[in-house]
Length: 128
Length: 141
Picture 1: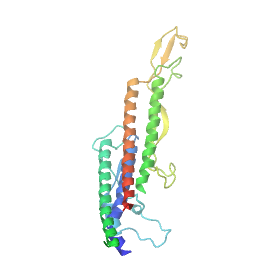
Picture 2 (picture 1 turned 90 degrees about the vertical axis):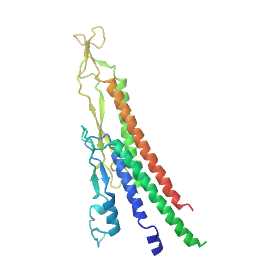
Picture 3 (picture 1 turned 180 degrees about the vertical axis):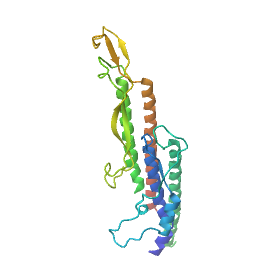
Protein backbone atom coordinates (compact mmCIF):
# COMPACT_ATOMS: atom_id res chain seq x y z
CA UNK A 1 0.00 0.00 0.00
CA UNK A 2 1.62 3.17 -1.27
CA UNK A 3 -0.58 5.34 0.96
CA UNK A 4 0.64 3.84 4.20
CA UNK A 5 4.26 3.64 3.10
CA UNK A 6 4.51 7.35 2.60
CA UNK A 7 1.90 8.56 5.07
CA UNK A 8 4.07 8.06 8.13
CA UNK A 9 7.26 9.14 6.39
CA UNK A 10 10.48 9.27 8.33
CA UNK A 11 8.75 8.85 11.69
CA UNK A 12 8.48 5.07 11.52
CA UNK A 13 12.25 4.66 11.40
CA UNK A 14 12.78 7.58 13.73
CA UNK A 15 10.62 5.98 16.44
CA UNK A 16 12.60 2.76 16.21
CA UNK A 17 15.90 4.61 16.45
CA UNK A 18 14.76 6.77 19.36
CA UNK A 19 13.84 3.56 21.20
CA UNK A 20 17.25 2.11 20.40
CA UNK A 21 18.97 5.26 21.64
CA UNK A 22 17.05 5.05 24.92
CA UNK A 23 18.13 1.44 25.31
CA UNK A 24 21.79 2.38 24.91
CA UNK A 25 21.49 5.16 27.49
CA UNK A 26 19.71 2.73 29.83
CA UNK A 27 22.74 0.45 29.46
CA UNK A 28 25.03 3.30 30.45
CA UNK A 29 22.92 4.15 33.50
CA UNK A 30 22.78 0.48 34.53
CA UNK A 31 26.57 0.30 34.37
CA UNK A 32 27.27 3.61 36.11
CA UNK A 33 29.07 1.73 38.92
CA UNK A 34 30.89 -0.86 36.79
CA UNK A 35 34.68 -0.41 36.73
CA UNK A 36 36.23 0.09 33.26
CA UNK A 37 32.84 0.42 31.58
CA UNK A 38 32.90 2.79 28.61
CA UNK A 39 29.75 4.81 27.98
CA UNK A 40 28.35 4.63 24.47
CA UNK A 41 25.88 6.53 22.36
CA UNK A 42 24.13 6.19 19.05
CA UNK A 43 25.19 8.43 16.17
CA UNK A 44 21.58 9.24 15.38
CA UNK A 45 22.19 11.27 12.23
CA UNK A 46 24.45 8.64 10.64
CA UNK A 47 22.07 5.77 11.34
CA UNK A 48 19.02 7.64 10.10
CA UNK A 49 20.84 8.67 6.91
CA UNK A 50 21.74 5.05 6.35
CA UNK A 51 18.18 3.78 6.85
CA UNK A 52 16.90 6.53 4.56
CA UNK A 53 19.34 6.04 1.71
CA UNK A 54 19.72 2.29 2.12
CA UNK A 55 23.49 2.43 1.82
CA UNK A 56 24.26 -0.98 3.20
CA UNK A 57 25.73 -4.16 1.79
CA UNK A 58 23.34 -5.80 -0.61
CA UNK A 59 22.56 -9.37 0.32
CA UNK A 60 21.11 -11.72 -2.24
CA UNK A 61 20.99 -14.75 0.01
CA UNK A 62 19.52 -15.02 3.48
CA UNK A 63 22.76 -16.68 4.63
CA UNK A 64 24.93 -13.73 3.63
CA UNK A 65 26.63 -12.03 6.54
CA UNK A 66 25.31 -8.56 7.11
CA UNK A 67 27.48 -5.55 7.75
CA UNK A 68 27.98 -4.56 11.35
CA UNK A 69 25.90 -1.42 11.06
CA UNK A 70 22.85 -3.21 9.70
CA UNK A 71 22.90 -5.45 12.73
CA UNK A 72 22.69 -2.36 14.91
CA UNK A 73 26.22 -2.62 16.30
CA UNK A 74 28.37 -0.49 14.03
CA UNK A 75 27.06 2.98 14.69
CA UNK A 76 27.69 3.04 18.41
CA UNK A 77 30.21 5.67 19.37
CA UNK A 78 32.07 6.01 22.64
CA UNK A 79 31.19 9.15 24.51
CA UNK A 80 34.03 11.38 25.66
CA UNK A 81 33.62 12.15 29.36
CA UNK A 82 33.95 15.68 30.72
CA UNK A 83 35.86 14.44 33.74
CA UNK A 84 38.03 11.41 34.32
CA UNK A 85 37.34 8.83 36.99
CA UNK A 86 39.67 6.63 39.02
CA UNK A 87 38.12 3.31 38.02
CA UNK A 88 38.14 3.89 34.25
CA UNK A 89 34.36 4.25 34.03
CA UNK A 90 33.30 6.93 31.56
CA UNK A 91 29.62 7.08 32.54
CA UNK A 92 28.69 10.47 33.95
CA UNK A 93 25.37 9.91 35.61
CA UNK A 94 23.94 13.40 35.37
CA UNK A 95 24.93 13.67 31.72
CA UNK A 96 23.29 10.34 30.99
CA UNK A 97 20.16 11.34 32.92
CA UNK A 98 19.88 14.49 30.85
CA UNK A 99 20.41 12.50 27.65
CA UNK A 100 17.76 9.99 28.69
CA UNK A 101 15.29 12.79 29.36
CA UNK A 102 16.06 14.32 25.97
CA UNK A 103 15.67 10.99 24.20
CA UNK A 104 12.34 10.40 25.97
CA UNK A 105 11.10 13.83 24.93
CA UNK A 106 12.18 13.22 21.34
CA UNK A 107 10.44 9.86 21.39
CA UNK A 108 7.27 11.60 22.50
CA UNK A 109 7.68 14.20 19.78
CA UNK A 110 7.97 11.46 17.16
CA UNK A 111 4.89 9.79 18.64
CA UNK A 112 3.01 13.07 18.34
CA UNK A 113 3.97 13.37 14.66
CA UNK A 114 2.81 9.80 14.08
CA UNK A 115 -0.46 10.51 15.87
CA UNK A 116 -0.98 13.47 13.57
CA UNK A 117 -0.42 11.58 10.36
CA UNK A 118 -2.49 8.66 11.66
CA UNK A 119 -5.49 10.85 12.35
CA UNK A 120 -5.02 12.28 8.85
CA UNK A 121 -5.15 8.83 7.29
CA UNK A 122 -8.10 7.95 9.49
CA UNK A 123 -9.96 11.05 8.37
CA UNK A 124 -9.28 10.22 4.72
CA UNK A 125 -10.55 6.68 5.17
CA UNK A 126 -13.69 7.76 6.96
CA UNK A 127 -14.40 10.44 4.40
CA UNK A 128 -16.32 12.76 6.67
CA UNK B 1 11.85 -4.01 20.48
CA UNK B 2 14.31 -1.68 22.06
CA UNK B 3 11.99 -0.02 24.55
CA UNK B 4 11.12 -3.35 26.12
CA UNK B 5 14.85 -4.20 26.44
CA UNK B 6 15.16 -1.24 28.81
CA UNK B 7 13.14 -3.15 31.41
CA UNK B 8 15.57 -6.06 31.29
CA UNK B 9 18.66 -3.84 31.44
CA UNK B 10 17.42 -1.64 34.28
CA UNK B 11 16.22 -4.81 36.04
CA UNK B 12 19.75 -6.24 36.12
CA UNK B 13 20.95 -2.93 37.57
CA UNK B 14 18.28 -3.00 40.29
CA UNK B 15 19.38 -6.51 41.11
CA UNK B 16 23.06 -5.58 41.32
CA UNK B 17 22.40 -2.50 43.45
CA UNK B 18 20.24 -4.61 45.77
CA UNK B 19 23.14 -7.06 46.23
CA UNK B 20 25.38 -4.08 47.01
CA UNK B 21 22.92 -2.79 49.62
CA UNK B 22 22.67 -6.27 51.15
CA UNK B 23 26.46 -6.42 51.35
CA UNK B 24 26.49 -3.06 53.14
CA UNK B 25 23.90 -4.37 55.60
CA UNK B 26 26.02 -7.45 56.22
CA UNK B 27 29.14 -5.33 56.75
CA UNK B 28 27.36 -3.01 59.17
CA UNK B 29 25.94 -5.95 61.10
CA UNK B 30 29.43 -7.39 61.51
CA UNK B 31 31.15 -4.10 62.28
CA UNK B 32 31.77 -5.05 65.92
CA UNK B 33 32.53 -8.73 65.34
CA UNK B 34 35.77 -9.79 67.01
CA UNK B 35 38.09 -12.76 66.42
CA UNK B 36 41.22 -14.26 67.91
CA UNK B 37 43.38 -13.97 64.77
CA UNK B 38 43.57 -11.50 61.85
CA UNK B 39 42.73 -14.34 59.45
CA UNK B 40 39.47 -15.12 61.23
CA UNK B 41 38.47 -11.50 61.76
CA UNK B 42 35.57 -10.24 59.66
CA UNK B 43 36.66 -8.53 56.46
CA UNK B 44 34.38 -5.98 54.80
CA UNK B 45 32.89 -7.40 51.61
CA UNK B 46 32.72 -5.47 48.36
CA UNK B 47 30.67 -6.62 45.36
CA UNK B 48 32.49 -6.45 41.99
CA UNK B 49 30.29 -5.21 39.15
CA UNK B 50 30.74 -6.38 35.60
CA UNK B 51 28.93 -5.39 32.38
CA UNK B 52 26.94 -8.12 30.65
CA UNK B 53 28.30 -7.67 27.17
CA UNK B 54 29.79 -10.89 25.84
CA UNK B 55 27.92 -13.67 24.11
CA UNK B 56 28.91 -16.12 26.82
CA UNK B 57 27.29 -14.06 29.57
CA UNK B 58 23.96 -13.58 27.83
CA UNK B 59 21.85 -15.69 25.55
CA UNK B 60 21.73 -14.22 22.07
CA UNK B 61 18.85 -11.77 21.86
CA UNK B 62 18.27 -11.76 25.60
CA UNK B 63 16.53 -8.69 26.96
CA UNK B 64 19.31 -7.85 29.36
CA UNK B 65 22.31 -7.50 27.02
CA UNK B 66 24.28 -4.50 28.21
CA UNK B 67 23.07 -4.83 31.77
CA UNK B 68 25.20 -5.39 34.81
CA UNK B 69 25.88 -8.30 37.11
CA UNK B 70 27.78 -8.96 40.31
CA UNK B 71 30.71 -11.09 39.18
CA UNK B 72 32.13 -11.74 42.62
CA UNK B 73 32.84 -10.55 46.12
CA UNK B 74 36.15 -9.02 47.12
CA UNK B 75 37.45 -8.76 50.66
CA UNK B 76 38.63 -5.42 51.97
CA UNK B 77 42.38 -5.73 52.59
CA UNK B 78 42.66 -2.96 55.16
CA UNK B 79 44.68 -4.28 58.17
CA UNK B 80 42.68 -5.23 61.25
CA UNK B 81 42.89 -3.22 64.41
CA UNK B 82 43.89 -5.26 67.46
CA UNK B 83 43.25 -4.36 71.06
CA UNK B 84 44.58 -5.79 74.29
CA UNK B 85 41.69 -7.35 76.22
CA UNK B 86 42.88 -10.44 78.16
CA UNK B 87 39.47 -10.90 79.84
CA UNK B 88 37.72 -11.46 76.51
CA UNK B 89 36.84 -15.12 75.81
CA UNK B 90 38.06 -14.61 72.21
CA UNK B 91 41.48 -13.26 73.26
CA UNK B 92 44.55 -15.13 71.94
CA UNK B 93 47.39 -16.35 74.22
CA UNK B 94 48.91 -12.87 74.35
CA UNK B 95 45.54 -11.33 75.28
CA UNK B 96 44.80 -9.61 71.95
CA UNK B 97 41.51 -9.56 70.07
CA UNK B 98 41.14 -8.53 66.44
CA UNK B 99 38.36 -6.22 65.28
CA UNK B 100 36.69 -6.30 61.88
CA UNK B 101 37.99 -3.82 59.30
CA UNK B 102 34.52 -2.42 58.54
CA UNK B 103 34.54 1.37 58.32
CA UNK B 104 31.04 2.52 59.25
CA UNK B 105 31.31 5.89 57.51
CA UNK B 106 32.49 4.26 54.26
CA UNK B 107 29.59 1.84 54.45
CA UNK B 108 27.06 4.62 54.97
CA UNK B 109 28.40 6.51 51.95
CA UNK B 110 28.31 3.32 49.89
CA UNK B 111 24.72 2.70 50.95
CA UNK B 112 23.65 6.18 49.89
CA UNK B 113 25.43 5.75 46.57
CA UNK B 114 23.70 2.44 45.85
CA UNK B 115 20.31 3.84 46.92
CA UNK B 116 20.75 6.70 44.45
CA UNK B 117 21.73 4.31 41.66
CA UNK B 118 18.68 2.18 42.47
CA UNK B 119 16.41 5.21 42.26
CA UNK B 120 17.98 6.21 38.96
CA UNK B 121 17.16 2.86 37.42
CA UNK B 122 13.60 2.92 38.79
CA UNK B 123 13.20 6.27 37.07
CA UNK B 124 14.56 4.80 33.82
CA UNK B 125 11.94 2.04 34.01
CA UNK B 126 9.16 4.54 34.77
CA UNK B 127 9.99 6.69 31.75
CA UNK B 128 10.22 3.66 29.46
CA UNK B 129 6.89 2.34 30.75
CA UNK B 130 5.21 5.69 30.20
CA UNK B 131 6.49 5.89 26.61
CA UNK B 132 5.37 2.33 25.95
CA UNK B 133 1.86 3.16 27.14
CA UNK B 134 1.80 6.26 24.94
CA UNK B 135 2.86 4.15 21.96
CA UNK B 136 -0.01 1.81 22.68
CA UNK B 137 -2.36 4.80 22.70
CA UNK B 138 -1.59 5.25 18.97
CA UNK B 139 -4.08 2.46 18.26
CA UNK B 140 -6.89 4.36 19.98
CA UNK B 141 -9.29 6.19 17.76
